[in-house]
Amino acid sequence: MDDRTFRNAMGKFATGVTVVTTEFQGEVKGMTANAFMSVSLDPKLVVVSIGHKARMHDIVKQTGKFAVNLLTRDQEDLSRLFAGQLKEERDVAFEWVDGHPILPDAMANVLCRVHSTYVAGDHTLYFGEVTHIVMKDEPSDPLLFFEGKYRSIGQ
Ligand code: FAD
Image 1 (cartoon, rainbow, N blue to C red):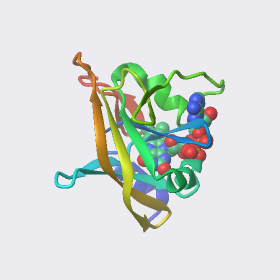
Image 2 (image 1 turned 45 degrees about the vertical axis):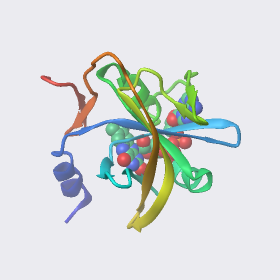
Image 3 (image 1 turned 135 degrees about the vertical axis):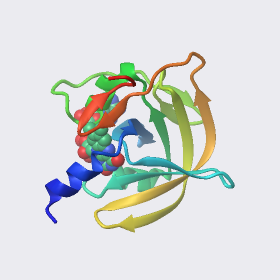
Image 4 (image 1 turned 90 degrees about the vertical axis):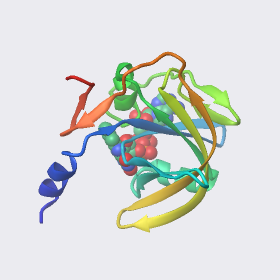
């Protein structure tokens, strides 16, 4: 099977969009990821899959912690920025909670310490034990990703 067929088929699975953030050597690092899911209630675990070519892969290995910021429909530009798809650099204002840099105005921020890892092909699954959650007070719609395009509910 060729890569295009695999990618096209996986693109039929609609997802939300997250930005994984962590702090390393005094700098904040973010990476857009949609390979995220909830895993376990007891203990509370989530997982994010990070490609071996991504700088974030080695950084999370060293920091041992990360936050998953669940984006709203109004944060498509942040998704593009942290996927390296914007030409210009931008200053992003992060908030700090429990030593984690998080994106304000996300639907939720899921703060984790690395619980375990599993190398799967050219990605590593980072399982995170959830240490804290920040939730947005006002309801908002999620940013969605489907067939390689950003969407929002009803569009
Ligand atoms: P870098 O190239 O180091 O950084 C990415 C961009 O973020 C750069 O432009 C950088 O300037 C910017 N940036 C980083 N930190 C800051 C900061 N503090 N302030 C301002 N800008 C900053 N890859 C996966 O491995 N797993 C996935 O699940 C996944 N899902 C994706 C979903 C979508 C919708 C998209 C568009 C991409 C996805 N990717 C995923 C690809 C991934 O986001 C990119 O390949 C990413 O650029 C690679 O990460 P990196 O750590 O090498 O990033």
